[in-house]
Image 1 (cartoon, rainbow, N blue to C red):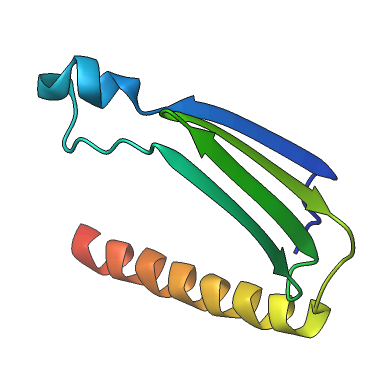
Image 2 (image 1 turned 180 degrees about the horizontal axis):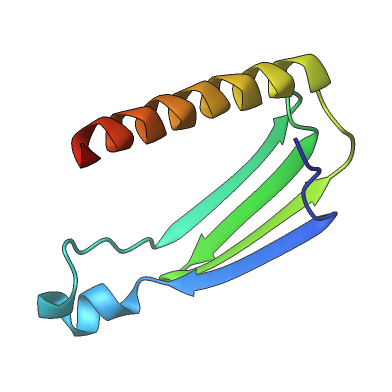
Length: 93
């Protein structure tokens, strides 16, 4: 599995759903939110803050994490994708 970027930042808002509710599938608005998370299996720390519908997320990769666990996930995904490709091939005949 390839290692993610060292730092990843995201910014988004909830205002589209409030101002144009017909343009989205659901309306969700966050007044205040704060969350900090450490994912030891992937070596990431994440901080998510929101106020009045404006969200700020920063994710920092500190280590490679649990490499064996990540390899198991990659193996599972590879098997699923191989099965999906095989099923596509059966439908072509």
